[in-house]
Image (cartoon, rainbow, N blue to C red; front, side, top):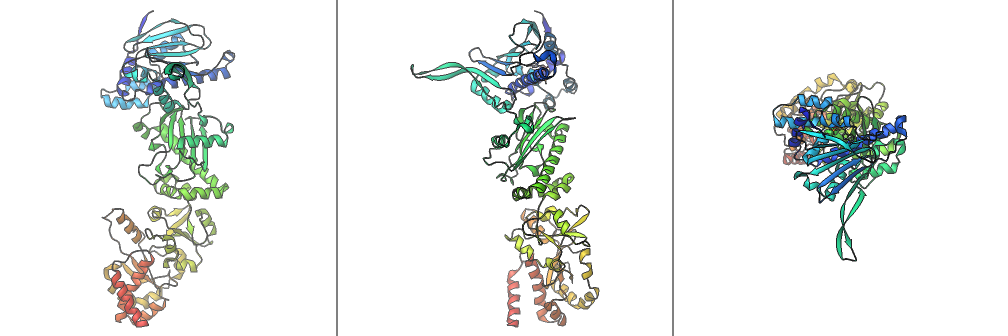
Amino acid sequence: MAKQEFQTEVSQLLQLIIHSLYSHPEIFLRELISNSSDALDKLRHLTLVDEAYKSLPFEPRIDLELDEDKKTLTIADTGIGMSEEDLIANLGTIARSGTKNFLAQLTTDAKKDSNLIGQFGVGFYSAFMVADSVEVISRKAGEEQAWKWTSDGKTGFEIEKAERDVAGTTILLHLNEEGAQYANGWRLQEIVKKYSNHIAFPIFLTHDKSEWNEEEKKSEKKSTTEQVNAASALWRRSKSELKDEDYKELYKSISGDWEDPLFWFHTKAEGSLDYTTLFFIPAKAPIDLYQADYKVGVKLYVKRVFIMDDAKELLPSYLRFVRGIIDSEDLPLNVSREILQQNRVLTSIRTASVKKILSELKNIAANEPAKYLEFIGQFNRPLKEGIHGDYANREALLDLVRFKSTKVEGLTSLADAKSRMKTEQKSLYYITGGAGTGNAESMLRSSPLLEIYKKKDIEVLILDDEFDELIFAGVDKYGDLDFKAVSKTATSEDLKDEAEPDQAEALKPLLDKLKATLGDRVKDVRVSVRLADSPSCIVSDEEEPSLQMQQMMRAMGQTNMPASKPTLEINPDHAIVKKLLARPEDAVAEDAAWLLLDQALLMEGVPLKDPASFVQRLNRMMALSI
Ligand code: ADP
């Protein structure tokens, strides 16, 4: 039996693995089980496609056997196995170009190096974190001779002939001090459930289990063998094999929800990247939906091996209500969080997943409108966040969100609002505000700003959600249509014909008087074309946040907001305005000026700075008229 030396790179890699992964030695089991699963996959494939293998027996299983006294653990599979040359090439040299690449990038900075390792597989060598000697007994499928490879993981390995009943590989670990903690059946079960529960093949654990002996009145150890994984990577099966019940069960097991999901999207991608995604939409919004430290609902798997369930980079945060699984064939098993953030594979999966989720939602909206409304009832708001944050998918998201409207009961889509527009209409309109008033919707519906739209029979969308203004201030188009707030100073094209320029001339003395009275509380006072029944309203500049928005941002702690002033508009046809025009110098006119401003502010849900003065003025006016 000749001793062979490791390729220098192998020794280097071994040292590095042991040092960089010392804080998670348990992953050795995940890596070895994953290798066994790959070996089983390979043999299964051959028995399906290759004549020479078709007649070979194939009973796929992975067996863990623990001997607590001897402190040994074996991991055995009935997979493809390795010949003598395979053992030398796979376990004694580093043939994979990825790993060579990795070693070429190594620096002398230990910290940087341990970060680097996350980009590559750790694999078999992680066994040396927990064992001071490893034996690999393997027989290649289709061959009679088995071989034994032995190493202490330091300098080299030895190879000799061995015996094995069936094809496959057995890895025998002589656990070291660090590994002693794994000489425990419960611990092993726990690790298998955590990382390898969905490996497609059954994993059995044989260990000594304490059992109570009733006759002898004492507990005694008995060797037992039991299956420890669920062996059900449901998402890897084809859709046609799966029943609704299967999906619902899986959803409940991964989400902890006891209600059925609303719907699910199952996708298998093959091509430049191979991966499977299975996403679920819960029936109810998760309770932490609006918390910054929300719990991530999508788990990352690599080749059916569980990797992590707290990676916020798997989906954009506005889709944080989505539950499910991303299972990639192309990522390394020990991919780290730092690496996920800039990983090309993950970026492509994420981009495609978002597109998929949004397009499936669109289908549901079209084909199952009632169900879609259930979804909107829970998740309209996160979708709106996406409009703000995900520019690339803005069009799709604009089509998915739903709005209240002056024209329909319930909710409408922008597409439907567009289809109701009059042919000559140039823009889609919306009104925002009322945040924090507790009755934003009814406040907006009775806003003076809507009067002209009612008169002209133009639909206005009611955006009464707290953050609507913040979000939609950044959206000025829906397709080729302008998307406009009715509270902005610039008069929209659709209202242009209402302007009566000569009236401004006639009203000038009154406008001047109002400006002089209100001073720097207003930016300007002008004649309105939007009012029908109310005497006045306030509007803000195109570029400026509205008063309500300023209020909200201050409430959120933004104290350095420039305080912009509203523009007061008055209705030239209103009786109050006409009467005021007749007596602009009157003392009553001063009270009237303030009342015109204050009532317009109140109608928009802006609290008055000086309610006492407002009430005094109102009372003086009442005294005059009663
Ligand atoms: P990786 O699995 O990332 O390729 P490893 O270092 O874990 O890297 O394994 C190296 C190679 O050894 C594998 O690619 C495979 O060819 C072979 N191998 C490892 N474990 C087994 C096994 N249980 N059965 C058959 N081949 C194996």
